[in-house]
Every structure is written in C-alpha cells, then in structure tokens.
Length: 469
Image (cartoon, rainbow, N blue to C red; front, top):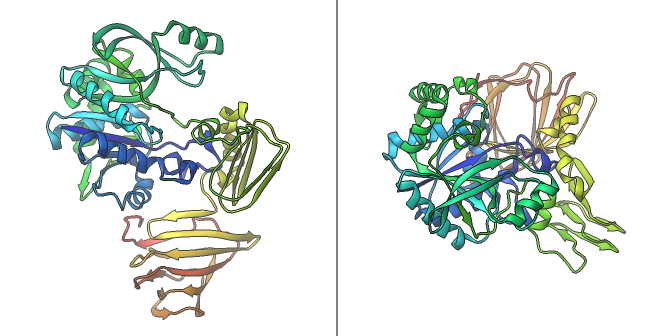
C-alpha cells in the first residue's frame, strides 16, 4: 500500500498579499483554477490508486481544508498540529500513525503547495520510488534543472542504484548564479523537490539512528494524541519539538538515500515570478489571472486581480498583485524579497500579514466593509445549518441587519427569528449566538461600536467547532 502524506502549511510570505497566515499558499488558485491543495490531493489519488491520504496541517486550517476538499470522492484523514515545527516532526508523527493504522506501508510525502501538471510522468517516478522504498531505501524526488536556478537546493547524484535512480552524493544549499550554472553544465545535479518515498519503518529507523531525541519525543506525543472521526489532534507538547527539516534531521546523515531524477514538470510556486511562469503568456510575455485587465505597451508583466479592473501602461518586467485591502507592485527580479513586506507588517502589528478583508471561519465568512475610530462594518455569511459560538464581547456592542435568509438569534435570555430587513441590537456583555437553520445561505450586515474592536474580544462559552475556552 502506498499512502500519500500531504504536508499542508506555511505562510507563503513571498506570495503576499494573496497568501497570508490565515489563508496560506496551499489554498491559492493558480490561474484561477483549483487550489494547490486540491490539485495535490487529486494527484495523490491518481498515483496511489485512491488510497485515503493523510494531511498534516495546522489545526486552524482544518475546516478550510475540509471545505476545500468536500467535493472529492476520497476524503482524507487529518493530523492537526497546534503549531508548525517544520517537516521532520510532521513526518515522524505521520510514520507513527502509519505503523499503528496501516502496518508498514510506503509513504509518499508531498507538499501541498507544489504544481505538477504532467501527472503520468510523475506516476512513473512514483512507481520507481516505491520499488526502491520496498527495498529499504529512503527515496527523494529530484527535478532535472531547466536553468541555473538560485532559488532551489540541489542534490549531487552519485553512482546508479537502479536503472532509474542514483545514490545521493551530497546535498547543496541554494547556490549563487555562477555555481548554479556550473551544476547545470555538469549534468549530475538535480533540484531538491522536497518530496519523498519510504517505508514507515525505514524512516523511523533512520530517526532512531540520527535523531533519537526527536523520535522519543514524537512517540510520547503520539501516545497522547486525541483520535476522533477523520482527525487527530496533536497535544500542545508538539510545539516543544525541535523545529527542523527532514533533510537536516535525517536525509543529510543517512547512507541508504537514493534520488530519482524525474522527468515531470515541477514548480514549488515559491514566488510571484514562479506564478507568472506557470501561466500562458501573450505575445509580449504578459500574464494575468482572473479579473479584468487592460494592458497597453507593456512587456513581461504579471497582473493578479480578482475584484477590480486593473489597467497598466508602459510597464516592463513588473508584478502587479491587487487584493481588496492591499496592492503589491514590484520588479519581477525582486520577487524573492516580498517577504520583507510581511516582516515589516508584523513589526507594525498590521493585520494584513495575517488575514484578508474576507476571512474564512468554520461557519462561513465575514468581510470587513469599512472601519474607523469606534466602529467597524462587516458582511457576515453563514453556511446552511451552521452556527457561530455562544459568545460575549466586553468592549463592543453589535447591530445585526439580515439581508437574506433566516437567522436564529440568541440574545441574552431571548431567542428570536429574523427575516430579511429585520434587525436586532446586542449590548456589550450580552451572551449571544447566530445560527442559520435554513437550507440556504444567511447573509447579514453587522455594525460594531465600541472603544476596542479587535477580533480577540471574544469569550466563547459553547462552540460546535471546539473553539470554546
């Protein structure tokens, strides 16, 4: 049995302002199509014969992931981290799960934020990798370089271990341009894709030899993991594990490492320049995604816009990334430096590093329409049958006006039903809950008033999504 293990997380800071902490890169739709997470799930199904995959992700992304994959025929299992600790702890826990649940299966580890269009070629590489993994090898997927790329780590290939694979001679960090050109000319270097295949027992044996402390801690955490339905909640102690990649923890030390130089197309979509490369360009090299654009006398420019018309004139080699609450304009050659914007936003305490104007919640979404001193206006959409938590605010009152649908409102000791064009007022300090008992969406406008309007001014008493204090 080949079990896909999908690693889904990371803030994707180089893809700001579309990728943010609360809505990271796996949920991006490259070119307006399916999300990267959905594409990875479908690719996993194609190469594993529809084996139920394991998605390792932050617990904050569970409901978003669940909704994203709701239409998939095969639903995944989830291993939920309280906080991110890099790939080594995630893979160790996934292997422990596989040993307990599926005996000693082969694991196919795939990041959720890569783009591979040539699934048949990838499937061929997976077959070769699985055969080696069954013989005890820890197998990496390399990608044949298409140019002297400085943004990827490299693997130097050694002697042949099979017709389709080589031993790993050494790992190389991201090189400078001169060194990358040298690797390309030599022909025995491949990009490190961050994808792996190995038996669960083989990777655990490697942890026991090369990082026993991490394995011992992971085993204790697994013993205290809460198992329920389709998800497993890792305890808070997971956050105390060493923050280390699988390459540093095991791969660069182990001896039984093989690499398959794949012929499939691959991109880690690590920056906006990579997004542009993944989209067909016009005759002048310009690319754009969904939304209306007008491009005049411009070349090699990428435009990302969903809601607004964007017009550009006389641009060359630029990125124009427009979202409802933030606009990025940058030289394509500086796309790796977008993360500096995120660092500055964090330093200033600006919410734009974390959330969009429209924020996903387990029950639906809210969109901030306008805000200023002492007030905030939101549009709230509640999914059919969903409910917000029974909660209270200490610093703000709220006015709710129903736009469409049928709302059941708990307001203090009262329970009322509101239709379109009806409203209610919730004073600060009142316990309240909003529910949609109908078969369609519920939409309403919320007006908040008070001296403090932060999202952390919520005391939850009951919550069907497990978020109550």
